[in-house]
Image 1: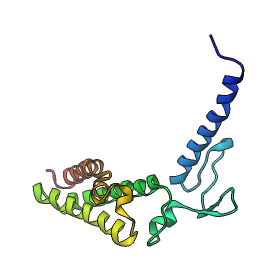
Image 2 (image 1 turned 45 degrees about the horizontal axis):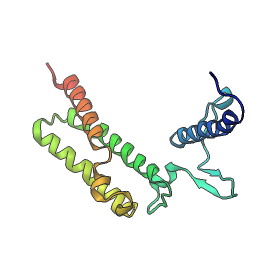
Image 3 (image 1 turned 30 degrees about the horizontal axis):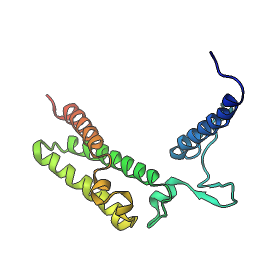
Length: 164
């Protein structure tokens, strides 16, 4: 039988808060675009007002700013993950056009991918690696996904351009 009374009423605010938090998280990467009330609003603003009167700096401005403060660890890990995917696409296109083949192409991809990310989080952002589980955890964040994406893009471009 369905529950009624105070137990259900107590759950209602939690569900609403959870849904609101989910929408805020989804807007985080899309620069403030939202489909609430049926229309899209452009996210041209780089800062968003907070309840305490301060301003929240957008993820995009922190990505490009050296030594940015990352209060949310998952936000920085998301940046690492997507940066790695972008590198995979770019290198996959280059490897397919150049026509690079075999183990040499894979090894160079791994070195460039890991090296660029290491330089980004250790030299440019200067984060404390121990907060994220150590250097190895940051270096391998999203690596296998980017490797698979790299292989797919590399194969598609190589086949399209060099296959007779």
